[in-house]
Amino acid sequence: MKKIDIAKNLLISNKDMLSCPKCHSNMFIKNPYSLICQNNHCFDLSKRGYVNFLLGSVKVNYNKEMLNSRYIVSQYGFFNPIIDKITQLIRKKINTSKNSQVRILDAGCGEGYHLSSIIKNLKSGGNYNLQGIGIDISKDGISIASSHSKEIIWCVGDLANTPYKNGQFDIITNIFSPSNYFEFNRILRDDGLVIKVVPGSNYLIELRNGFYQGEKDNYSNENVLQKFKENFHVLYSEHIHHKTYVEKKYIKDFIKMTPLSWGSSNESIVQFLNQDSLKLSVDFIILVGIKQSKDQPENKQFLEYYKSEYHHS
Image (cartoon, rainbow, N blue to C red; front, side, top):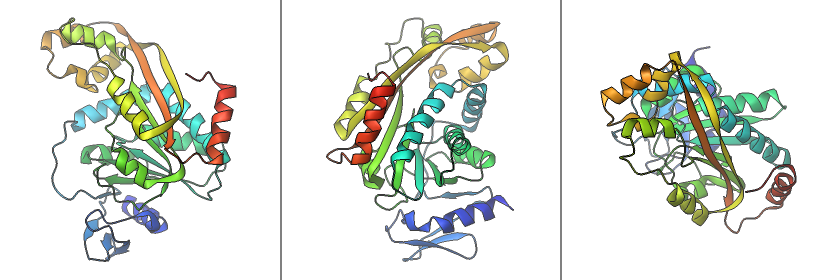
């Protein structure tokens, strides 16, 4: 079956979650590969298997080359600690959920590797009725994502104006991506979880120091963490940090996939490329939040499990 037909079937099965980003009315499939709302606003399915819900052109800093490199780095396993932890968190949530179908939205999904891997891990570990949905403002990112995974609904869209109805998602993941917490609260179920991953202060610090040689201030995530805590009640947090070994053939992609290389000199980049290997710092903080004043019984069970099974930071 063609990608566009697979995408069409997924959208038909999940049309109850869709809302026109222009007028917020219901949507349905027509003609035969277009999403039409009740006011005749039309969004066509791409032959690659995604829908573009943007209402106008946007400028995106992440180009296709950068996103391809990030996909290669992901395949190398650099982000596996995040993927494995998020899989554990979601699996426990699913096991305490009363919903017949679990919808997982990756908000700011980029090239889609994280969401695809999480869905694959969950399905290999249990008989769950899951639907993954990925949304990103980058058309290049969604194009890459849809080329690798056909079982996920991929959307080009604005996190400030998502094409989804209220209360549609059991899980929203937000990994190294900008957020819109008003929208997240709107589209999250009352018993849903938001899982956000932010870089720690030592994330890829070897590249930062090499590119800028101490001329750039150290990264601080305090504002990001505080903003999350202002918008959600934090159930759980964990700091993951260790060193990882990078083979020479992957150094180029590690450099290309991060904005840390933007504005750095060619000389500093060449110095890294000439090395036989690298040791880089893995430094992430994972936050799990729920809607404020929505402390459902299922979330209490979830929290008690993690208090007993893991160190709660």
